[in-house]
Image (cartoon, rainbow over all chains, first blue to last red; front, side):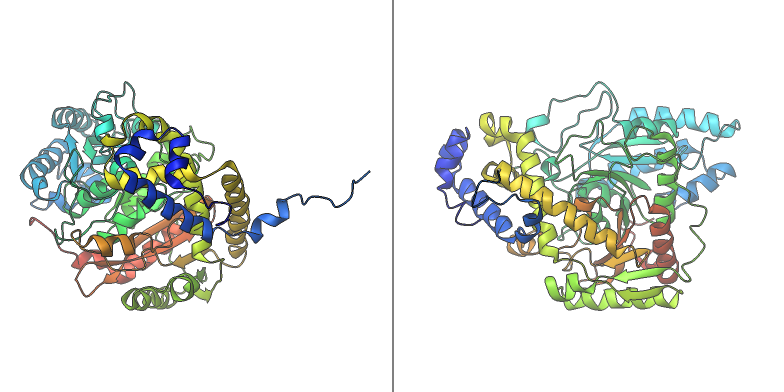
Length: 61
Length: 463
């Protein structure tokens, strides 16, 4: 999860329309990203496995 | 009667029935007290004295002419300022909503009016029930009435402060991650987050709709029970509505009831302050001495609950706030801006994963209730912090075991469990089965009766 989310927070925030925050409050963007990374690291991964469809090595049919 | 300020819902009902007091007398006394003292603790944003006095006149006429509607008739109360009252601003304690005046009451307010309750005004909160104390707020933040250097808890901070300061016997707050239970525990009160959607959220400004709850705060368990009994009779809007919570067993004691003590949360997952660990052990001992069967119960790590809760909360809050974050970011205070924009970094995949985990965690709590009737857990993991000590506030604010039950929707109640070395309250949490409020309140009442913390609590600003 951490690697998947290894992004530039300022670029990401720009891309979702938060240009004004990026320009005026860049430290808030970085702080918010740091906080959410911590949450994602604590998010249980194995509990979601039961509902995830794994890719098949060979076609089923 | 000189101590009107400290009478509860049950006391007022008795005093009105016997005509020892009238609603007008009580409302006048409380408004005068608020006007005299609230400037030092900032619990109210808006006091609607004229409407409250008018409502008190009507209640007085009805009660004294034999039309007593029930326990809330003629009872003054405050509402967290994210709950709509027709014609009064709902500011959410934010610059963004200073000019928002709803044209109709929130559903819970309609219910309160139908029960004859009297609305004193709107109470301060953390900005959008999300931020924290900040000098950037449009109104000053609430202060702990026992010691104004300390944080009263949040986000329903003004609602807790008003009760602990003797400004009202009842408040209605909201709780998306502990916002009723935190100030209740911090201020020596009782706060109930009912089962999800037992009380309607219609007309409440949303934080995170799938984890947010409306509930009562009061100085005693009995007052919470009376309020819930009345509010559930008149609600009837939410998916989980019941026709009047049965509180007839409130005083029945807890002999034979099974209490699951989740020590793991505060002794293994997140090591609590030793004062809280000792206080919780003492709660378990008291419940045992009252006849309950206390046994240890293990649940998944509290950090797992917290992370799943946060991903859902932040995703939903982003959905609410994204338009304003794009156009008016400078109108948020810094703590709120940082918190709500965190949702911008979450994807649909993260939310789906969190929802998947949520059902597993909810099932784990339901499984625990196969073997017990009520759970006992920590609420906060640390004693109340000083407002000026921002580092300590930040460190301790996320250290709690309240959000698991926002995630699972189980009813959860926080109340005082002792006093810390700083003389401020320590707290604990009791959790019930879905729609198990009656049993939950019965256990809380047995503990309250056995310990009587309220008798020794300070009475700020005198009688």
